[in-house]
Amino acid sequence: MTTTEKVLIGTLTGLVVGAISGILFAPDKGTETRKKISQKSNDTISGIKEKLEDLMNLVNEKMNLAAAEIKETEENFKADGERIKKDIRTTSN
Image (tube, rainbow, N blue to C red; front, side, top):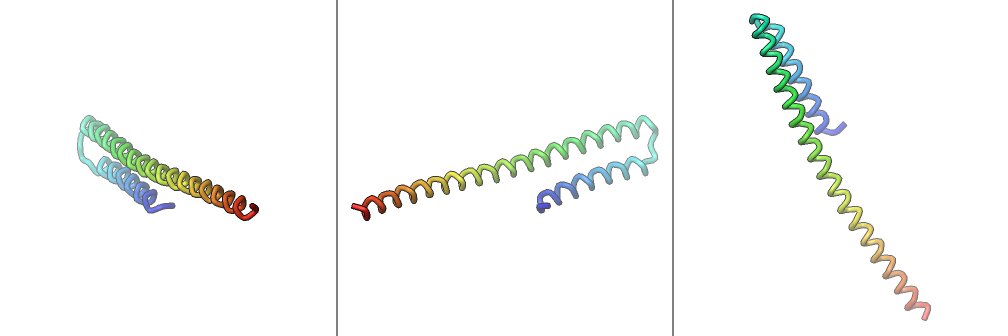
């Protein structure tokens, strides 16, 4: 598990535990508690969406870097292959 995944899981766990604790220990009326639950749920969902967007951006960045490295390696192999062909032709003549 990567550090990013650990941070994401820890953050989400903290959000959920904090929201539940706040609701359970709140001495408010039912309507107020329901409003708080709704707001905390919205906040938690927003936080999760934000973290997922950050994670997706990180994944996309890593994939783009990997694709660029693969393309570079492919180009290097092609160039090496052409050099080897040329060397073979030169030595066999």
